[in-house]
Length: 419
Image (cartoon, rainbow, N blue to C red):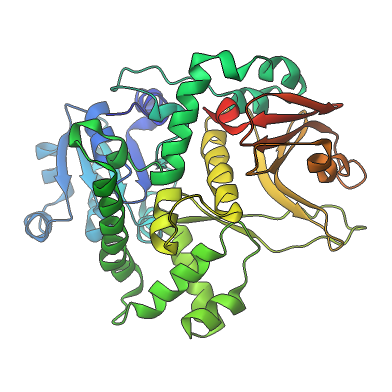
């Protein structure tokens, strides 16, 4: 197994008075159940994925719950809506009761949370593996803080944080191999679990089975579709658009559905943790700025399966792989940060713009191994647009060395930055 950074965060919250009720959500197969059983080994485990279990608990009162299961992990709890009221009553009446709720449907879970448990529950999301987690062996493995996370906390110290010679650093060699595997198979825990003994062909089959299961279970739970073909077509259209500005019209055309249906399907993909919509930055009212979100698939392995990519990823998919990893790691950076993309009407574009208290961190992503100052030209043009200084400018690429591009701009290898 791989250690998870969120484990320590949940453990800290669980030890506090307000940690008596915890919700963990995330895409199917990201390891929620295994993680929770590891953190709470003394808790009873109850899965409401099983209709027989749902029937057994249908008549259980709050007092019965408090007496029989004062501490429990309640998995896929959204499939038994009445359990939210039972948990609320048991939690409010008995201080010894502690419950951990889990599920893969954000829409259904959050509906019930907002109706019954608002103000009582601590909410966490479990992403696929981050690169530093991929390099661990077991729950006690040390998870290194990446240079990207250090930069977000101290963007003015980029020179010191990025310094070094990657080509002679053994950790860089290991991080590069991890990054190459990540680009091929993504970060779902199963494809990194050596105990399963999967070869590359079996990893690809697992990803294909995952995509099929997602359609047959999660999508049917959310949408109640009799015919999945329009959703499949819309999902593939979105996969091919990853790394770009969302075009509802293109999705509707490709899937032969109404634009309103296309927008709804995109929302389902977002709320089931398959994609992320990166907000545009447009605080400058004097500048004509694009105000549409940018689409990124969260996991490159799933993206490959849906889009049918083999071999080297196209540039837009590579950008999504880097951005998604940066966003995942951002959740655990020791800083108050927000993420955007920026595009002007006259063609200036920045792939990722992070607002930090010390200023902006601006990132351009290049799949090439050679980087020049020309590649940072959009990053250099930001000063007249943004409302705060740019503390650090990065060109993240497939290069092998860290290079100064002048001022506070650097070309940096992706594995050196994120691994």
